[in-house]
Length: 412
Image 1 (tube, helix red, strand yellow):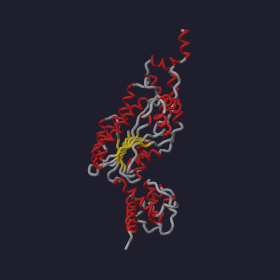
Image 2 (cartoon, one colour):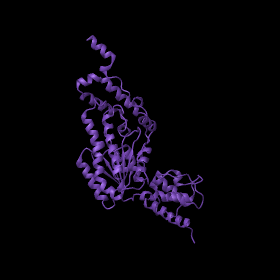
Image 3 (cartoon, helix red, strand yellow):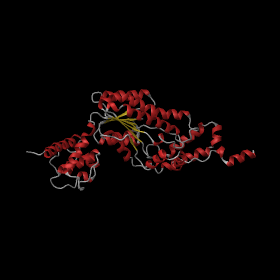
Image 4 (cartoon, one colour):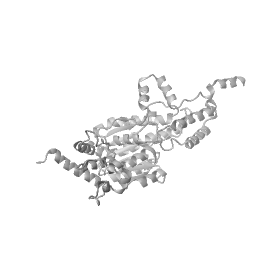
């Protein structure tokens, strides 16, 4: 008689081998070679040494396989040297990881929108490595970001061109995804696209900038989400949306961007409540300050600053002063110099929102967000305003309010 534990071990061992072979982590033509040589060449270059040559005692080869599987699929694991990282524990952890939330099959796939750079590109690459079918949208199929995804990802990833301000682009992408997932449903939707090119007070920001931010950051994501809901309902899938703390708090000089993200956060929170009966889980990602795309390119911000100055009515420019606009843009560029380059915290939050059995409603990857939200929720408004100015941008007085300006007016 075999014990239940032994039967479970045999079944899970078979499952591990099947997963490793299916995702081409193990080389099916080299199964009799030493363990390290059985890892396929593509994975051997990407996996850490501990995953290729795990430090396991003789007779614990399945534990070695589990470590390799975890490393390749991005599943966190305890070190085999820890007391509770036993063979049996590892098998049960694997079972939970594979079966949690009736996890997505590799055929259901996920749609990621805004993958030209930053969070979207990194997440698309990560999900592809994990073995998922990914539909990734980019603004330009010939952009460096799109080319990089083509070179680094497998054939499971499909690149789709889409401009979120154009309804015809959105409808074409929706039709493509529907045609390829109609029988399986869509497991995940990641709304990541974001736009902002203006650092200025709300009064100085042209109305067109507010409209563009709303079109890309809010209406585009809303149209995509509504269009894909039938597929998400059939799969009982997930919606993960990258918003911003600027949608929760009045960051100085980010009115257009913040207003669009506030609308996005609210509508996604509404979806979370309304879609619960369908089994769809909705999460918001509210990242700290990271280096993504053009956010840290001084030339980009200087160009748009000059365009803003050229577009301002003379009376408004006189009231605030050109040096006022110059100063706030310089402060923003300085702030972004200390932005975080490692995007893994955000990528991991998005992945957890897609795969965890009980994903969080909100994720806050990034430094300093805890104290920021504490101040925002529990302290007086003037404390919050002072904090945000000290943390982000602290504009000088507009020209018309400065003492020297009043002296010049009196002399005239």
